[in-house]
Image (cartoon, rainbow, N blue to C red; front, side, top):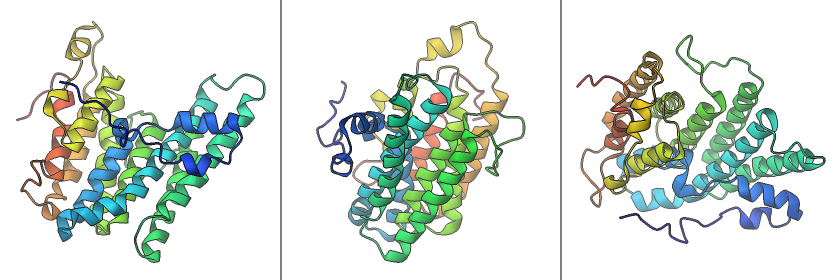
Length: 293
C-alpha cells in the first residue's frame, strides 16, 4: 500500500523566506526545492543527526534541532539544482530567464544560512553550521567549474561531483547541529558522498531508485524499498561494477567507525541509524554488484 504524502511532509518551509521576492524569482526558487520526503540529501542530514540522539538519548530534542537544518538542506539543494541547470542545461536559455534564475539561486543560498540560524542550539554551534555551508559552497563552486577537490574519491572514478558534494554537506550539517564528534562527522560525510557516488553510477539511476534509498535511510515500510531490477540487469548494456563496488566499500568502511556511537536497539520499531545506512549500501545494489556475504 502506498503511503500518501502528508501535508506536513509537503510543507514548503522557505515560503515565508522567499515571499518578498518578485513573482518570477519566487517561482523558480520554490520550484527548485525538493519535497523533503523525497530528498536524499534531507534524509542523509536526518540520519546523521540521529547519531547525536543515539549518544545522548534525547531524540525529541534532536528532532527540534534538525527541523530548521533539514529545511536549510532542502533550500541548499534547490540552489545547487538551479546552478546545475544554469551551467549544463537549457531550461533558462530564454531571454531574461537566466538573470532571474541567478537571482533565485542567490536567494536560496542566502536563505540556507538564515534557516540554520533558527536551530535551537548554542551560538558556537551555529557558527559551525555557517562554516559547513561556507566551505561546502566553495567546494560546490569548484565542482561546477570542473576543478578537482580533495574529496577522497577513488582515482579514475568520474561522478557528478555537485551531487556527491551536496550529500556530504547535508550529512555534515545534520551531525554538526547535534554535536556529533568530529571523527564521526567525518565518517558520516565520507559515507554520504560515497553512497551518492555509487548511486550515480547505478545502471538504473531513476527517481524510483532515489525514493528507495530515502525509504531505507528513514526506516519506512520496507514494501517501498524496491528497485527496477529488470531495467538494471536486462537492458543489454554491460554494467561496469568495479567503480560502484569501490564507492560502496568506502561507504561501508566509513560506516564501521560509526558503530561505537550507535545504539543497536530499535526506537519505536525503527532500525538503528547504522543498520539503515548499511541497508542503503546493499539493497539498491543487490542485482548490480556481487554479494560478498
